[in-house]
Image (cartoon, rainbow, N blue to C red):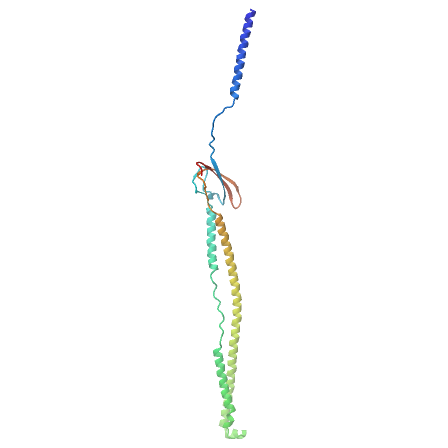
Length: 264
């Protein structure tokens, strides 16, 4: 009986040892590393950072395929505004460069009319004066009383000459006054012309300042247009991601990532 119990004990011990060994083998298979030969197929990537005025300036979207030279972004709206501003400045600059109305100088007068009138008036006066100075030769009597009595016609003739002398003298004074007035008028024209010259020089200076200002603005617009160049894709690939990096009052910063397959 005792031998039977011992035999059963050995059998049970053998079964337990077998179970223990099987359990250990199972744990080894579960924890052992799995080794596989895999070649990663991660594509090359190229990232382009863009500055936009508005999202519509971005000409691609995620998932879109692009070719070399295809437009990635183009600041169309800003470019149109700058081109319109450039046209306005160009037109204004063209008008500003138009020559001013020519300022004519005051012609130097010769006073021919006034001098001729004065010469004629003086000639008439001198002629009458000579007649008066020589009138005594016409008188027969030397005594004034006898002249008044016996040569009354000659006395009347002398009185007429003296009246004409007075008129001629007045004409000479008037001719001198006319000449002086003409000279004064010329001086007045010269003064007014000097004022016009001063205004003209001021106007020319303002015109040049305006031209310089417009040219500076035009140069600035040209520089801004040069900076608004379109961005073209340098590679052939697929747009993997479009990411907005930031935004302020003037612009939006975006990032476009391309998956490049098959090289550049």
